[in-house]
Image 1 (cartoon, helix red, strand yellow):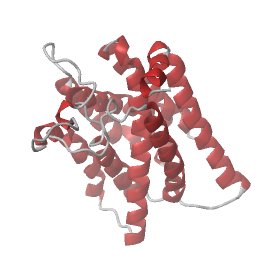
Image 2 (tube, one colour):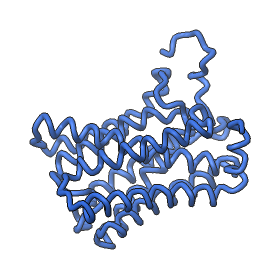
Image 3 (cartoon, helix red, strand yellow):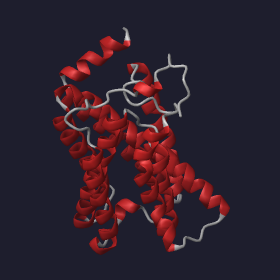
Length: 267
């Protein structure tokens, strides 16, 4: 079966496909947690658990994207881009570096672990976001964005509740993910690129882990602790409104500047 034949059912049944993706990820996350923490009684750090989960889910995501033939449609992770396109991702890099202002104190080994945790987690989470967005895009960018952002935020809400987080802080965190995902999607539609979000979002996850110590961000117990993340995610959503393709610009389904047949410089 060729990739196009595999993709057609996704567009015909976007909700079913989205539910399948989210349910698969959630089930695997829970199974790994139950196996590692409950059955094997291993006392691993949050970063180490995240790396294990990240390896499994990233491999599964990469295999799925490859089997569906969607590297191009999802933004061709890993290819170069024009400099002016990359400038759209600068706010996310700044956002990711903000936790460093709190003065984290980590060893070199932990820093490496946090970077691996951040990049792997960012990769699989953004693959989930991109797959859901791809499924809904034929229904129009507005509906696709609303459904993708809502489902992505809902995924984080469900993960938090199922892993024992307090309900109200988890809900606030999910709202921040709703705004953040809108900004992600807006820039993705503007540029046709996905891959620059991986290092920028991975940077945020790594630096947040360095500040929080060995506490999972999805297990926050105080709404007050989440207010800075909520405020910044709102600001990024405003940036997403600026980045949103204008009336005269069609949302980018792929990255035209990254066409493999181009011979000009990516800069």
